[in-house]
Length: 326
Image (cartoon, rainbow, N blue to C red; front, side, top):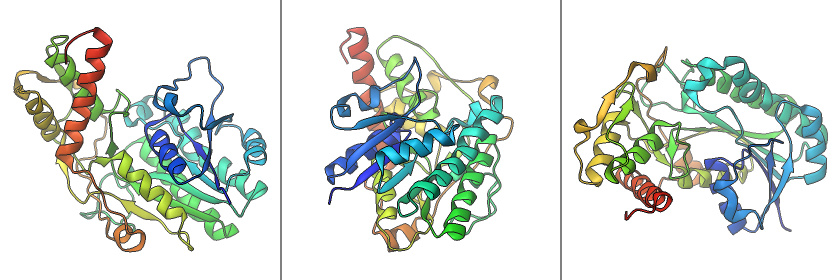
């Protein structure tokens, strides 16, 4: 029988890659979108004839109950959130309502409507924050350093609580940073690749960034959605760290991006205090051993290939938008 999957946050980077993956596996895909006059369907334009878009909001449990009764999903992937760390410092309450309590509303709607469905919660490496051990595993204690990280910790533990309290097949994927050409421009990796393209094409001369020292475990989003799906195929729900097991600094990302287009990064990068965070996470690196052993998952795209992929995509996009030769 054909399975039906509901994806919240389908218009985002992960949602678009996950929808593509599930359709290749024969799923019927429904994507939840909030009613808004400014919806951006750019990442899923090529999918709209093949997926069903349904109205819903993580702030409204009644609407979520109605949505689940309409769609009747076999699998629910909760990817929706206020997911930008810097924004969470300026909008901490909104971040809590969507990224934390929104998970509770969706889990409770599932408990009421269809407790036999399977649930995936998008947890985050930002939950580890001020890390107490390196690398981080599923057992590493959390010490979040932003309202976003705090909200993700709540979403993670409420998923565990509903799993244990109501015997739901509810799983959290603790995903470390995962990037792609579909990443939003507000994220540092895409900001770098996009600005490098603009500088190479003569449209800008400098890239303004905050701290260059933080180190992250960066992978390709298209690889990571495969792990999401694999988690919900397990007989027993468990939580998994999804990562590459390697760490690279923001500075290194800049070096690779600029060198890929034949430029010297130090000629263009300017550090700007306005992009410094009140509390920074210095080092994140995940241990994906459990995912490799239990799910058979490992990343296919290495760091250098990811950087080149993003820069090349932005070169093509910027050149097309401005009628230039890339």
